[in-house]
Image (cartoon, rainbow, N blue to C red):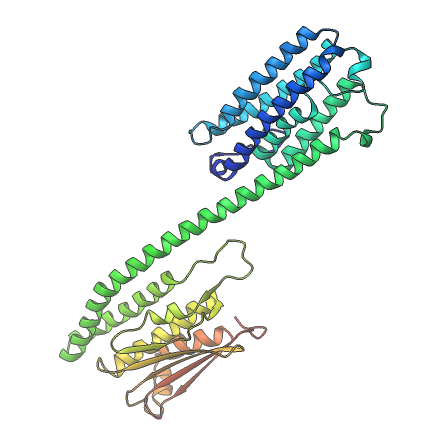
Length: 396
């Protein structure tokens, strides 16, 4: 922990690697600046030999810490980096405090400490990259307080000295940059995983479509042709075919991009095109038709139920047509077949007998979404589902 915040774990190492590399280049440049400042200041020190020893330690630590902080690929890099960040603060504080050993009050009260303010900023930068803006600001405040204490500048207007504002600003800016890099890295990783998962689902869907669905369709067709006891087998195969097509439709739908997205919507088109076959023609717009996730699933299930009724009651030779339209104000899905239609009074008779498949599987699904389901049976059977873009209040 640095400054009371979490230290970067392995998942964030790759995201902040460019920041760590740039920080080490800055560290080596500031070490050269510290040497130059030593050359300019050593005539004013009362113990010049000791000051050169301190600058030698500064250069040695700069090289060692830069080498260690650049190792972001090894498995122990987060632990090593945490140790170095803590060590950075200890070394900076010790070198700043040692200024009183090499210079008298008249000098250190009005000048930089031995490690220079610029080199001391490396500790703040490391804390900010490792721990984010909170750790960076906390480190900046700590180093600023040490600088004020060592130089005994309590009586001065602190804002007339650029040390504290500079260190705190560096900690805040680099901390925000590091957090942004980590967040972008996580989103990129998630996008890559979603892309890979989507491709795998599509591959499995193609294999299932080419194998299992064709076998179920064949059993349904042959069972209906043979009749007798095999008719029940054909019906069961038809039900499983519909269930499997709904499952494939749901799996082929894109996953919402981020868990905190305001509205989970998905394109309705792939949910409907999954039903396409030699006997089912599906027509959809060229542009995506996004609807709420639950509404898309329910509409797809209603279409599957309508197609199942066509296969069961019209026969395997029936042709069905699915049309998707997006008017902007509402989404319209039409399911039509070329069968003889439903005899007048047949639906009421089925409902009276307790057979609620149509009302529950089709009408119930659509009305629960705040839409309407219209049925026409004069020339074949045609369902037309209307789903408004904005659901009426009180609707599911």
